[in-house]
Amino acid sequence: MFPELEEISYKVRELVLKMTTHAGSGHPGGSLSATDLLVALYFKKMNIPHLSSPERDRFILSKGHACPALYAVLALKEFFPEKELFTLRKLNSRLQGHPELITPGVEAPTGAEGHGLSIGNGIALAGKLDKLNYRVYVLLGDGELDEGQIWEAALTASHYKLDNLVAIVDRNSFQLDGATKDIKYLGDVGEKFKAFGWDVIEIDGHNFEQILDALDEAEEAKEMPTAIIAHTIKGKGVSFMENNDEFHGKVLTEEQLKKALEELEKQRRKIKEAK
Ligand SMILES: Cc1ncc(C[n+]2csc(CCOP(=O)(O)OP(=O)(O)O)c2C)c(N)n1
Image 1 (cartoon, helix red, strand yellow):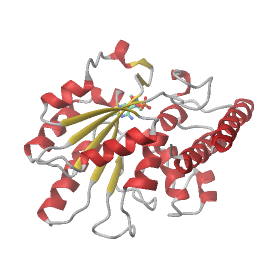
Image 2: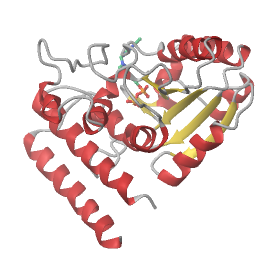
Image 3: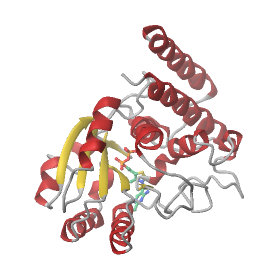
Image 4: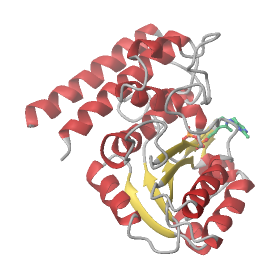
């Protein structure tokens, strides 16, 4: 059990829902599926002594539309003030609808899906050439795997033996307009990465113990990149959002927000009582 990480995840989920409803647009569903993965990375795994430190671990949100979750995590890490979250998607805000380099802590501009793994390859290869010990984590959506460039990048990563690179697939089984199985059948994602020369670990992407064990195991990989297939739930934490693709690119109304926050609070209280 990791009650301190669960507590942070509740806060992140609350902020995601509040800031997207406040903005009137955004992608809450895929932000909630990715929340626990982001919290484990930023609050337990990644080493970021300073945002400009050459040795810092890098994270790339390839499924850039889930940036409300990333922004909430970066604010809770105190890279910028929490109140700035409520400027999301506003003109001249540092928090745009998809990640931009103007946001403190964002390592790559993403949002056009399919590019993050190629960017991660470049950063990981540079780390090896410069003999720097940082690690690179790239979060991919499963719908994003429809993009051909992901597979080109997957081949490149194994060719260059990028054992400092970890791709995490947010396997929530949904994409923009439905279930991934109906839009482009993916089959066994882990087997596909294995066929491209990757080490593969399959986990429950909402179980902190499994997430952290997988991230530790990935550090043991030698001369090959690691793919963590994280089985998740789109809209995780809010009953009427879970596995409901309606909330891919649609935000909660004020009334739905109130209900969602009550649900999250109830779950948070249960965790506290169990401590
Ligand atoms: C190149 C490109 N084409 C289309 C889109 C529009 N788009 C935004 S999110 C999305 C679906 C994403 O599915 P997935 O990667 O599974 O995200 P998740 O369900 O985890 O939110 C699409 C097609 C885009 N952002 N980039």
